Amino acid sequence: MLKPCSARSSAKREAILDAAKASFVDNGYAATSMDMVAAKAGVSKATIYAHFQSKDELFAAIIRRRCDSLACAIDELTVSESLDARATLTAVAHKLLTMLLDPDTLGIYRMVVAESPRHPDLAKVYFDAGPSRGKERMAEVLNALSRRGLLKVPDVWQALDQLIGMLRGEHFTRALLGLPTSDHTNLNRTVEGAVEMMLRAYAP
Amino acid sequence: MLKPCSARSSAKREAILDAAKASFVDNGYAATSMDMVAAKAGVSKATIYAHFQSKDELFAAIIRRRCDSLACAIDELTVSESLDARATLTAVAHKLLTMLLDPDTLGIYRMVVAESPRHPDLAKVYFDAGPSRGKERMAEVLNALSRRGLLKVPDVWQALDQLIGMLRGEHFTRALLGLPTSDHTNLNRTVEGAVEMMLRAYAP
DNA sequence: GTCTATAGAGCGATAGAC
DNA sequence: GTCTATCGCTCTATAGAC
Image 1 (tube, rainbow over the protein chains, first blue to last red):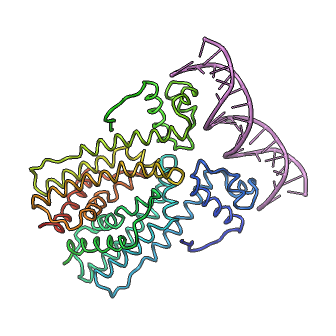
Image 2 (tube, each protein chain N blue to C red):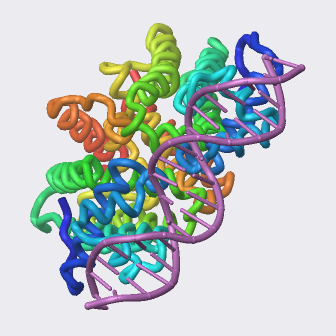
Image 3 (cartoon, chains in turn yellow, brown, purple, orange):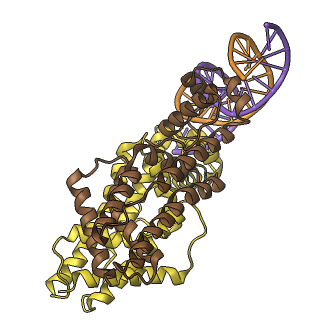
């Protein structure tokens, strides 16, 4: 579970946001009523409307708060500069996969996907703060390896698409659909296989 | 757009299914009312309930119908047996990517993802008929190449996860979130890059 | 800011005529 | 099978007291 970088809000406002996030994740946007949120947050419905103009705005606030957390977690996605290419890629791969399969990540992503036709602006906010920012962060890792002469990557963005795609493999889709997840052995095998492919293709 | 393999139903029933699919895709499950479906289908609400027991069953019928179409389209995913490894992989990659980025595929997938917490059984039905069946079909293609000595694949399922993951790249996520899609040049480049990786790793 | 109470609209599902 | 009409319920959002 991720925490925000900086928190500055009233206690009730946070309680509402927490309750709303849980309710939205569990029931979906449309099937979540403001009464449910109020009950779970331990406040009255009118109090919610004192903090948020509408159900839509409450939803947007949740996504934006999650984006802040995501961005923070992504920025912390660093790897020691003294490792070789294989160790670096393996480390960053494990961190990424852990982040992707986090229940919070999946729950929010499910909502963003579901509501993207009705809330296209939020989908963009999420994509920029999540996948896009994550890729930029990983590009720095790859570039560092290139600078040290441990990798030769002609197109960093394409290489990252390939690495991330291979890492997600079937695991992410299965988790997103709530299907029984592959065990930890397979996760390690996926990482090893993906790293092997990268090394084979982009060794200097 | 995909069509079902076999159709056997009354005209009104089909009209209801078509209208419901469009409404569910556009508005999401919970935000779609039976009145909307009735209006779009040109029937009365009671007629819908004469054909489907509940809103849930109507939703399930749509997913199942889509699964039939998907399975049919996937079974037709064949490639000439006389092509070399690169041409075969490129052809099957283009077919897969076209299928994945089809607006109908995306719309239904969005719904299945959104409702998977409340309809886990439907998520499994969809996964089996879609991704799982597609992978089995592609395994046959890879096995055929291996049999002809054009490829040496130690673990077919891992190789397929890698290939499919690289092909989806960022395109699928962007399309799923309704973000501006990369142009056709990039799609071709993605295919070429993925095929190149596969050949480099799994050449005999 | 926070509460109780409620307005006003829309929902899923059904009854009963044909 | 198909319709019109309607029941009983829940929803978002607000009014007004404190």
